[in-house]
Length: 191
Length: 205
Image 1 (cartoon, rainbow over the protein chains, first blue to last red):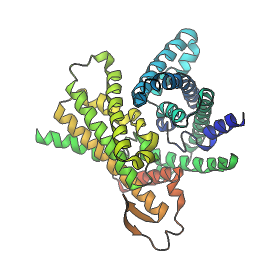
Image 2: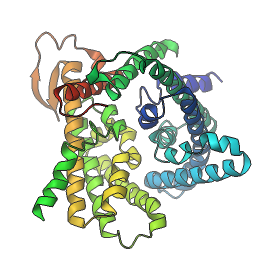
Image 3: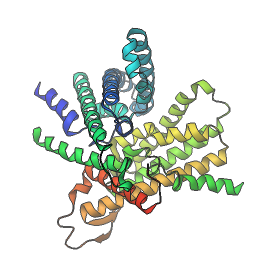
Image 4: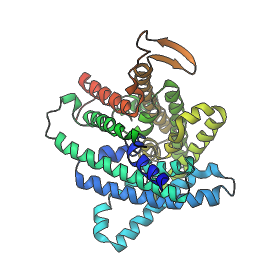
C-alpha cells in the first residue's frame, strides 16, 4: 500500500508529467487559457491514460514478451492508443452526450499527446506490475490536470498584468512554468 | 527549380523554425537539452526520422488512400523511430540511456507528423527532402543553442563526447545548477524567445 502511495505521489507531484518530464506541453500551453477547458482536457487525458495503461500492460507482458518482439512496442503502443481514443470518443458520444460536448474536441488531440504514450513507456521501463501501472497512470493524470488547472488560473490573471512587450504570450508562459516547477520542487522531500 | 528547393530548405531554419516560431516538438527540446551530446543525438534522430518520413510519404503520396493517411503516416514514423531506437541502443548505449524514453516519443512529435501531413503528402520528393532538411536543421540549432546555454551555466564547463573544451575558472566549482534542472529549460527558452522578439528576429503576439 505504501508502495502504491509512493508511486501515486511520485507521479503526480515529484516527477510531474509537465513540469519535470516535459510531456504534454502542447495542451499545457495551448489549452490552459481558462479553467474550464483546462479541467476538461485534464479529465480527458486522465481517462485515456488509465485505459491506455490498462490495455498496453497486458499487450506488452503477455503478447510481446512471450513472442520476443519487445522492439515492436513503439509501433504497437501508438496504434493501440490511436484506436483507443477513437473507441472512447465513440462510446462517450453514444452514452453521454453532455460529456462528449465538453470533452469532444480534446479527445482527438490526445492521440498525439506525448503524455499518454509517455506513461505507457514509463510503466514498462519501471517494470511496474498491472496495479502499479494503473496507479502510476492515475497519478500522472492527476498531476497533469493539477498543473493545467493552476496554470490556467495564473494565465487568467496574467492577461490583466502589464507584461513587457517582448515577454507577452509564450515567453511569460515559459517563465511562469519555471516558477511553477520551482514550487513543485518542494514536494521532492516527500518520499 | 533550384531556387524553390533552396527556399523550402531555408524556410524551416529561421522563418518557420519549429522550436522558436511554431513552438512545436518542445518535449524533447526541453527534456534532453542538458548537454551537447544529447543535443547532437536528438538532432540526429529527429533529422533521420523527418528525412525518411518525408521521403517515404512523398513517394507514396498518390498511393495512400486519403481516408487512412494519418494512421499510415503514424505507422511509417513509428517504424522509423524503432529503427533509430535500435541503432542507438546498439551503437551508443550511453547516449541511448541518457535520451531514454524521449527517443520512442519522437513518434508523437508534432513536427514530424505535421510535416508529413502538411508538406510531404502534397509535394514532390525533392521539395519534401528540402523541407525535412530545413525543419530538421531548424530543430537542431535550436536544441543545440539551448543545450549550450544550459551546459555552460549549469556545470561551468563545456565538453562534447568526452572532449573537454573549456572550464570557467571559479564558476565551475559552484555553477548555477538550476540550469541542469527541468526548470532551467523553461527559463532558457522563455528568455531566448523574449530576446529574439526584443531584437525583432521574430514577431510577438
